[in-house]
Length: 153
Image (cartoon, rainbow, N blue to C red):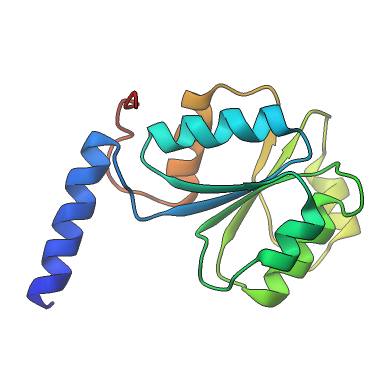
């Protein structure tokens, strides 16, 4: 391990304790601007870097490979469903993890029937508190440190 690696890991660890400037980047796509604004602000208070889109077609058009660690995608959107958006994004970059967001009951078995080749086990039911969402993100990204308290910027 180089000196730069140990410094960056030390910095990342210190930042995770304060909730400031984490390295992980999240993409949120939901057609409800109020939802994306709240999620963005809340997750940023936990130190995550967050991009949001309210139009799945624009999110797809502007998507960049190797930019995101996690995709939070609403299932029911006009133009493109969250499932279809995920399928297309995975063709561009197979690396990010995904969690689907829904205000409706969704059954994992139904998802597996419709999309048998896509491996997903994370579904978030709206409404969800920011603290619950941050904890879920922490678990999905397998971050080893404890979830810090939110910072208030």
